[in-house]
Structure formats: structure tokens, C-alpha cells
Length: 257
Image (cartoon, rainbow, N blue to C red; front, side, top):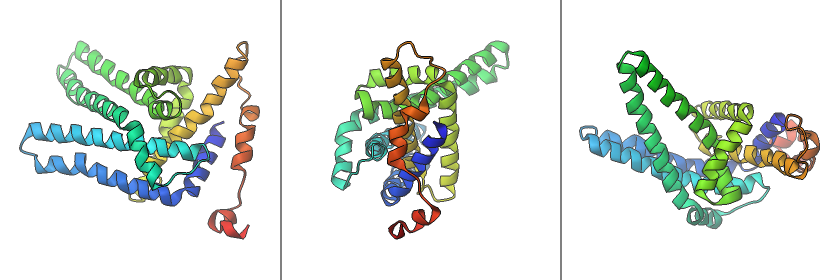
């Protein structure tokens, strides 16, 4: 399943390369708020924190709309500029709430962990470790939040709850997805965050969730099945047929095959 996930994500990214670059340009503009504006208010602490929160909210409002767009890509559908701007109406509210949640988590970790470590005691170390590992679980689980929201529930509380269910039911795959996204981001740095960029990460999350849902459809139809032995080959047969295979020549010159 992991091999096919990587293949499908790469193929879908390549087939929509121009759209992904353009969307990533939007991410760069949005990132200018939390990165650039705090420098202008460096002497006013309240304004620095305010611009960071605003920037975080704007980032995730945009990310929520982009997740709607890459949902279409993962499901073999297309979208235009009109549809893309329409995705904001579909998702801006959840983007605001999610942005505030992430901002609160960031401030909690940024303030509480150094404070407890400065106590230089076992209790302080325990409290700092507890906050760190709680935040780590949150980060891992929330990889599924936007895909759940845009593909399934359109409900904040349900999507949040199911994110944790997916994490605890698929810890190894969730950790792999996290490492996969770190690698994507590292590659993106050398490409000015234009490819794969944040859009590539959101695409990977949507692809991962879409493919993982085949497991739960199978278990729903076969309640007595062994959860440790999912027949991925059979479940992903249609997906493999849709994705197909390509030569290197077809990647570079698709019109010649």
C-alpha cells in the first residue's frame, strides 16, 4: 500500500504540476504575514503575537481551501480558478478554527516547555515531556484532519475525533506519512517551496486518507476479518488500473506515447 501511495501521489503531482506551482505561490504570499509582519513590530510584543496568530489563521484558511482542491486531484477530478475560489466558501470557517487551535498549541509549547525545563527538577522535566509528547501526538493525528473534513464529514468535531481514531489505529503508517511529508518539505526548500511545497504535502495527506479508507470499507463489509492482514492488492486493484504505469519518456514527452 505504501509503495502505491508514493506512486499515486507522485503521478498526481506531476500531472497537475502547473496548478500546484500556482497554488504554492499563494502559500508564499500568505506566509509573508506570519514571517514578515512580526519583523515590523519587533519592539511591540503584543503586536508580534497578534500578527503571528493572524498569519497562522490566514495560512490555514488558505490550506483548507487548497485541501479541497487537492481532494479533486486525488479523486481524479479537475478544477479551475472559479472552483478554486469557491473552495474558500466551503472551508474558511474550519480554517479559522483550526488556525486558532494550532496557534494556541504553538504558544503553549513555546512558553510552557521552556518554563518547565527551567525548573531543573524531575517534576519540571516530567511536565515538559508530557506537553511535548501530547503535542507530538496532536501533530501526527492532525495530518488526517483536513482530508477527513473535505472528503467525509464537513464537521469540525467529528473530523477532529476521527483524526485521533485513525492515528491510534494506524500508528506506523501515520508516522511514515509524517516522515514522507518532512522529506517533501526538505525537497521543496531547494525548489523555493514551489514544488512539491505545502500543496504537495496536503495532496499526500489526501491521497493517504483516500487510500486508507479502503481498509475501513473492507472491515465494514467483513467484520470478522483480521485487521492485521488487509488484502491491499485486491482493495487497490481499481486504483492501480486508473493510475497505470508510465515510462520515463512518457513523463517528459507524454504526447509521444
